[in-house]
Amino acid sequence: AQSVAQPEDQVNVAEGNPLTVKCTYSVSGNPYLFWYVQYPNRGLQFLLKYITGDNLVKGSYGFEAEFNKSQTSFHLKKPSALVSDSALYFCAVRDGDNYGQNFVFGPGTRLSVLP
Amino acid sequence: ETGVTQTPRHLVMGMTNKKSLKCEQHLGHNAMYWYKQSAKKPLELMFVYNFKEQTENNSVPSRFSPECPNSSHLFLHLHTLQPEDSALYLCASSQEASKVTYEQYFGPGTRLTVT
Image (cartoon, rainbow over all chains, first blue to last red):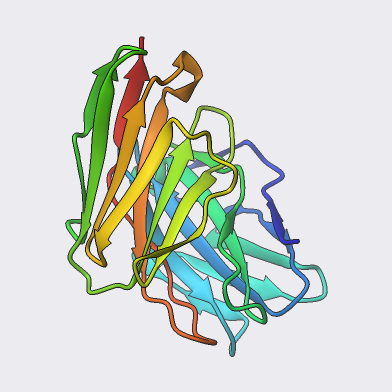
């Protein structure tokens, strides 16, 4: 069975500072990993994904994430946070070796960027 | 943002009513999903339609009934709901192929309130 943990319910960061939103996962096969962002009263919006290749993945709006196989982590990062980055962030995993397995989403982390 | 549309955006219904949620995707995808998002709970996968056939329903109560007449349209028929069914219902779509994983694209959701 696959699972995703986002250990922090809330992350607060000052505008201009670097931000990190943490994600760890468990999957029996090859991990396919995703980050989504949700703004108030909106659906989830795709940010980036790791399927294979370079462990550092770059995505939309200046976000990037680093895949770490040994630590089973896929933390989301941004060098300089903006107030407009304040939103709910979801990590998701899918088992790449079991076609037909669906996405499993983490509980979400609320990011607040303070001006 | 307009790749997956959902109507209505807001719905208030009594426990004895019958209503339907509609989802349409304009992305040429072959798989569609219904998710339930409740406050302080992880995203719950309700139904999956792959190539118009239902492949998973995750033990959803029978008061929720999905319909997928073609690969672009997905409905969720609701009847005799309970107050605990109040939530944001999200539709998503993706392109599925053997051994290839693509990200899901989400609609804006329908905010359902059961009174």
